[in-house]
Image 1: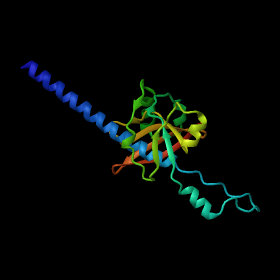
Image 2: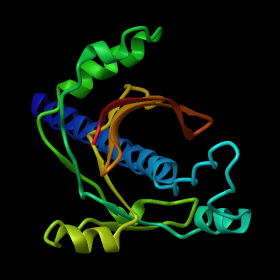
Image 3: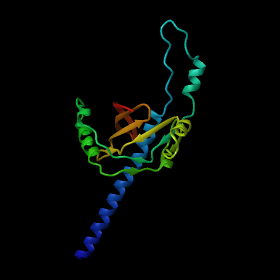
Length: 192
């Protein structure tokens, strides 16, 4: 009888871990989809200096902003450490505890690029790190690198870093409301 209950307990534990992992994977793809749409947008040309003619016509600006982007994404969500002082002044203790969770990761995480759903219809491909820097520059409009994602136990809050080549590293705080992830706050960590 003890063996039966032991096996039953093991099976229940296995399924509860599996459902957590499935929920984590699903939420990971949702967060990455949102962040790729947010950080993969073309950069709008700056306005002209006062008194000078515009560099671009409105039609050219619209063309730039509507260009289909090719986003190169590293296949690993890397673990990294972030200084807890970056969240100073944040009134929400949940994000501070998420940072502790974030800093406790010891391994990378591989995600499935086929499960990324871009609302902006970007072409999202894995980075080919064997290409020369020149070929990479020609192939990708943006190169993005993501960290592991620290989720709250209820999957309603998350913390992640995003690195954009030739741009910067950003700490992102996210919240899930009505089954949809939104970006709550972004803080630049460094210039990249």
